[in-house]
Length: 258
Ligand SMILES: [Zn+2]
Image (cartoon, rainbow, N blue to C red; front, side, top):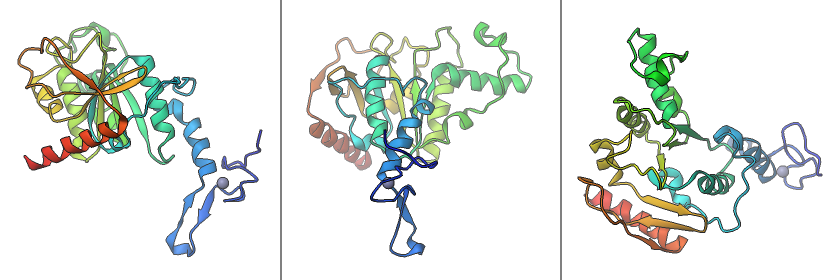
């Protein structure tokens, strides 16, 4: 195996000579990190994105999530193993300074109640009442990262504060201009019956691209009218990645026109 310097750069890298850094012509212009260290650091940091992402094996048929979604809020419906495969592929393609974190819906609610508990509010949730939750603000949980992914479907005990916790997380990020991906599962779709559903969230999601990821394809879900009742039959079209990029961009243009 090739030897690495303590910084993680390849000792005999022809580009950076083991420094991990390629200076610009003038010092004032700074420089860039070397690709040899980028790959290494991204791979090492996978578990900080999502526990066990490092061990995830990228499926042979796994397609790419459109690169433009790095800076865009979107909704995704998929299963956990499929999403882990897509996410690992996506994260490995980003610069190592780019940060990403997967938070679960349960963590959001815990943070919400942690703050309430610290303020002496009586909490009526069996999951939470007995636990020793530190007071973390939802903001601290979701805002620091370039991309925050909220994985739904972990929390099962009904709680009337759940929709508020999700909205709060998304709103805090939107406020600082950062994107959020909200991921639900085919067996637990974020419709009116979902623990975290609210009309406000549905309205917001109606302006976001909605991707459906399966083992070997990425579908862009056609927009349905605002959810009064969950639509009976939802349609998806199978498309190439290039078409998907265009559709996502068109959706953006439509949004800004309005
Ligand atoms: Zn190098």
